[in-house]
Amino acid sequence: MSHIVVLGSTNMDLVAFVEKAPQRGETVTGREFRTIPGGKGANQAVAAARAGATVSMIGAVGNDSFGTRLRSTLERAGVDTGRLRTTEGDSGTAHIVVDDDGGGNAIVVIPAANGTVDHLTPGDEELIASADALLLQLEIPLAAVLAGALAARAHGVRTILTPAPAQPLPVDLLNATDLLLPNEHEVATLTGRTDPRSAALALLEEVPEVVVTLGAAGCLYAARGAEPLTVPAPEVTAVDTTGAGDTFAGALAVALAEGRPMPDALAWAAAASALSVQRPGASESMPHRPEIDAQYTS
Ligand code: RIB
Image (tube, rainbow, N blue to C red; front, side, top):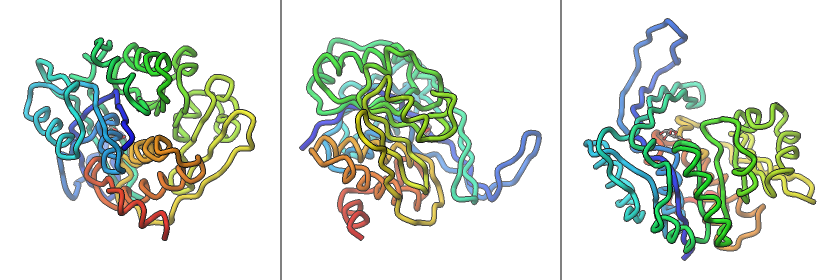
């Protein structure tokens, strides 16, 4: 079984489901409110575990009731939480509005405990060194993300970075990344280019492989010395796209760690992602391996 380490955030998602998201200054009545475990790091950990890997999570939760639930959600998914620290104070939260227009969302994240993950311990580095792949995102301080990428590089571990929330990145971090996994918005922030193909090609100067996720349109893969490849997504009706990119990242990491060729790994990850958007919630919507296999072959 492949071993994936995730260094990143855990958030309790406070989700309002509404027909139409409010404009600035407007109040609308929603349909339902739910608290759902999320956070880009924890989502990717759950996605990879359900996709069939052994997964370890490095990060932090607060010593509040959200923290207890976030930890137990990961443990129930089979994720090793031995290096998930509990800190004094609040857990991270994400304040999410999901609308009926294709399950689109708007999110405000309050980092809280995630902000304390600003360095790696020797034990964290040892864990990263033992992995087949390291999954990174940007909901913990950049110093720790960079330290994780450098530790992975030093031990020949493949690093997959989801550059979200979108922000400009230091060249050191891009150069320590093996595969960059932005969406259309993030790739535009990184390059200033709105055309995903041109943006992905520009990023190849810093990173050897780039996958731009394009929502219902699938994804675009670009690698140095090869013609870019577009992989379609299965056609489905989305009710909540929260965590779709994290599902894609977790499944892709598992497929690549198992040695599957890139086009096949991308199609399998797209199948996982398509399943997740048909159900509400981030971690709760993530598919198990038999479902992904069934969607992939259908
Ligand atoms: O990528 C989706 C995640 O982003 C949500 O679960 C939320 O916690 C935010 O971090």
